[in-house]
Length: 198
Length: 198
Image (cartoon, rainbow over all chains, first blue to last red; front, side):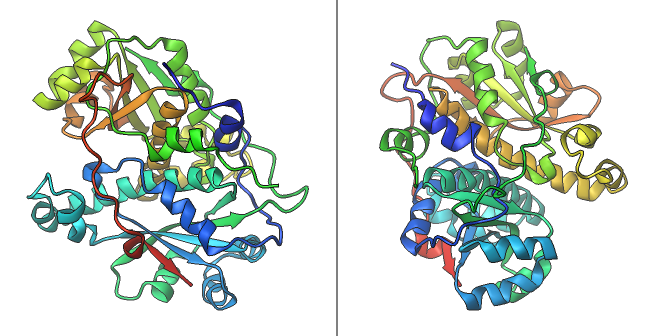
């Protein structure tokens, strides 16, 4: 028997969700944020490597450290959000390989010896996990606002000294704030440009 | 009012879904595959660039072209699946920028002039879209089996001559086949290694 996601779920996760630019004052507590991860952690990564790390910035002190590294428009967005998640790649993710991929006993050694492949595999799987994370925010009943226009080197110097973690994307999290919470949706490429058949 | 994904949806999309290794003989028709994309296309990409392309291989002739580029174990998996999706990056995705990002009139020119940034941005956004795609397969009531162990250069020569598209991941799609459809789930990293707070 086929179980599909019902129409409420499809709207929530895919068809009616928007990238939120302006958030309501409603708070988000740490349990809600932990629940996002308790969903996002499950879908697959290459060799189960799970290289993504998540920093939840949600205190005034945290925002004071974060905001100087955003452009003006993003500062306004991030200031309105109760939480900004800094999604980062752990460049040394292979150190956990024995634990997460015991079926591949040579994986840690192999990745340790090949910086290029380790980086490529890590970035790719972290990208998948960021996709899962954004949908998990929605599944948790919250709204996500990913932002470009960030000085990632500056964010990394502030929050991740030592160079092991490198930030890939910042995502504001909260509840939408009023009528201008999001922009009108932009065009999606028609299927004829995306789908091929063989 | 907060609308969360209900427990059926959470199980379907995140907590109870598995990477399927062995599929049932039940077919999947092209409308079902198109519906996957009609969900996966909506979540966000950087600057709305949408660089992912999808080739659905589902005919005997298509599988004859695909299987030689998989290792033995993956050939068995892919043979059991009614469909294998080849998820690929369009390296020239910026040619659509005027259409998908009219609010950023300089984007196409900027990306055309910077091969490194174009590639990095494309791979990152394609990774997000592959994450959305895998969850959209599940939302459509189907099961996904992403595979490593693929000769991607061989796949690209066969299906994407000219070099504009480059395959990133192959995902088998169908219904699970029997008691050994998936392996026992591997360990997820505990939150203490993943989550940070500021």
